[in-house]
Image 1 (tube, chains in turn blue, brown):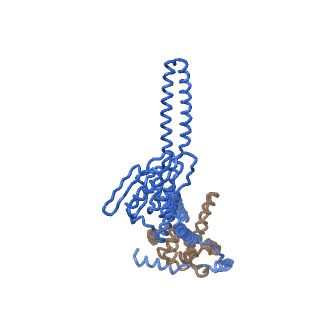
Image 2 (cartoon, rainbow over the protein chains, first blue to last red; image 1 turned 90 degrees about the horizontal axis):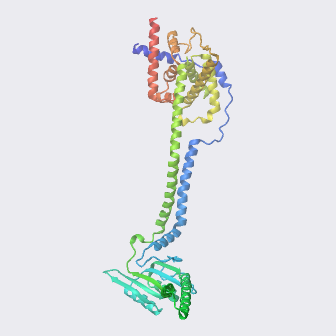
Image 3 (cartoon, rainbow over the protein chains, first blue to last red; image 1 turned 120 degrees about the vertical axis):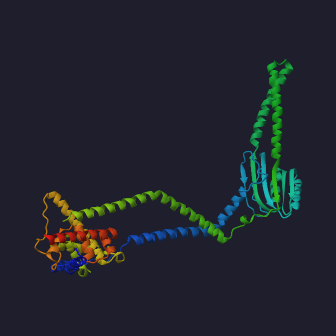
Length: 337
Length: 157
């Protein structure tokens, strides 16, 4: 077939295009008028609006939380940092009943109230930044001695620009609160830890065992005065005497521990690192808002990870169904004459 | 809108069915469907003519499926076609071309009516048929080639 004839066929098809018969026109005209467009929610704009609303709520919530939470969280952070700051004098404490890591405010003391009726062991670890290391160290030693205590160990070192001193002090328990209050006046407290362990129960137990051992000694000594003791009784008497001696020594040690509080005081002239500088209100806002946004992002990511495979499967099923339907339509038209 | 596109819808259905009476019924059904669904029409996604052609296609497919089921039930199928003497696809169409068009399948006639008679572009035709524009080109090329062959064989006879 020539190109001209081909064009003629196409032209003939176009020119002879059938027109709708008049009766069809009448039938269509007779169809009822459609109802006015009612208010309806379209899926895509509704989804877009829901997504925008969710983002706005997420960001807005983070911003509000940033404004609200900044000062509290700042204090919380500083408190935690103070509590975590390890000090050279920090030692393992035997069964601490109370531990406090408190404010860094200059000259303020938030220590516990000490009961005086029971024998207790106090361990105090403090760290402070002072302007004059020598003056601060001397003042701490003077205070300790004035309160009836003594210096167990001292380590003083100064460099070109900075210096540190470490004092292991023993302060009479009745005056330990006064001592801590005085030490907080030396400079800015960097960290503070106070632990109190009850010794009374241990002392009571030792006393009980000592009484029992003494009773054995008295009984055997009385018998010895009347008759000669058997070798087994002699051995038992020796053991009981040793026990009494050992328990008496042990009690004396416990009482000594309960008499003096161990205070480990570290003084330094080092300035805090720049990164530890107190963040500004704007920085705190961004920090807190960022935390919330980060958590929201994690939740969204988690939801995507969990729901993702299902969404993917649903999308694949939808695509497969559309392809199947398309093939079925084509088959129907191919088969139609 | 119905008046404006009535001819196009009718032409399309006539080519797909090859039966003027059936095309008439299906065209009326298409407009009825359009009136019921007109809220779903979104001009941003395509013209009214495209949307009506899509509806007409759906109506025709529904009819063909119903016919298939009926054929299976009755095991006897009498195709309601026009008499061969009467021109089906237009008053001015030569009997040879009319017969050649009639010998094509509905799918082949469908692509010819959309691209040649209604003069829709490739993209719009693809949108109506639910296939890619390249597939439209291929289908049209094959349909026209077949039409050409049928015309040539008619001339030889």
